[in-house]
Length: 244
Image 1 (cartoon, helix red, strand yellow):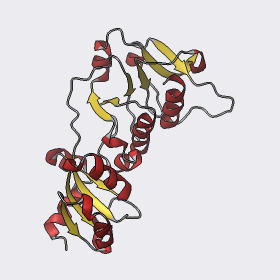
Image 2: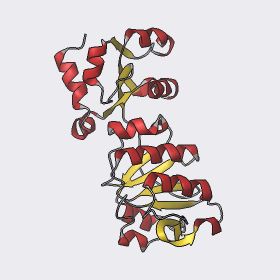
Image 3: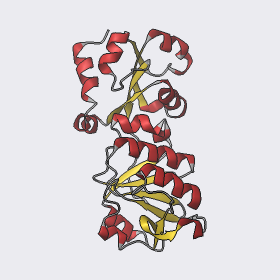
């Protein structure tokens, strides 16, 4: 049974400030926990789960602090609408700089504020083999529970950095910057990118003017319908499919 202090502590990690102070985040659900325990078990500090789940995973839980909880307790510590078997306190990933764009494809996100979009972009990057993302300081927090869930485990494999992206982009000499915009070169006319930066803008305002001025190529996804624009995560997937 969880003590009141432990319950309160786990619940507090739903907020950014306590997560930052403790250097941890909450991970939920069998899929994400299985990936963490198989690929980065040292990051999983404490596991709180239903007895059935623990019994099924004894072999991979040998080095972790594990506590059996009830369904009622799971509901109280879960951030999901439908709690799913297991919650864990996990050490944040090591994403200290410096970050270089040389020799690889890097996604740069300008003020992506919807947690679901950020998580989906991370998952999409993982699918296409993009291993690093640079976010502006005002993007959604990587360790927001909605971001973590939307990554579906890709948070383990894709490094996410928070930078002053105008300053950072200005330092990436000789690396082309592809800015996703409503008006620009049709993406289908471009060659595959082996080294470059793909810049994605805010869900409603797009890329800020100061960043557009740094772009080497302005890229657009041609459409046939009447929608005003594409969802940022969807646009990212289409661009990566074409350019990477």
